[in-house]
Image: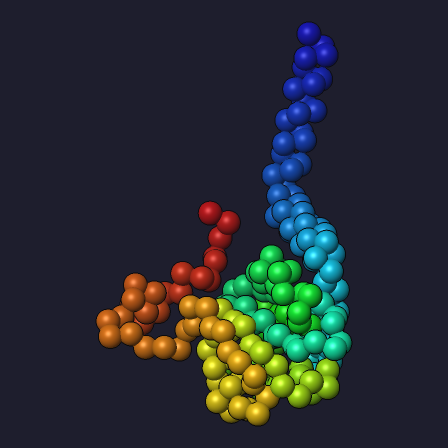
Length: 193
């Protein structure tokens, strides 16, 4: 009976300990899983100084090949592209940055996070890496940034692949557009539930 009570006590204390550190444990597991997956696919995590900040990114170096830059959407990070990008590594050099204010790239309240500002940061990344022209593959907000970048810097854009890009109007407002117009953003998480 004492063994059962001791076991239940240990189990209960373990459970409450896990609950207490649930977020930290989940974050740690996510980071380790991401790092392992990136390593398996041949990606290296690095930072590139673009002046006002250092952007965090995954790089699959293939110097003699054309370059693809992959941009994530709002509230996402560089991790979203790894499983897709791994299929392109033999034919391309791949860069997957965390846009400013996302993932491991810094956030400062006084910085500008508009599409033109993020587009300019992508150009600063290309400058810092001494890249003249690239293919852009992007999703959601990243698609808006890529389209803006292609319009403003056509000489640096070899091609665009936009997956469900934002910034394109629709004849009837979507549920998301209605929520945003009402001042509610479903992507902003305020509590664990």
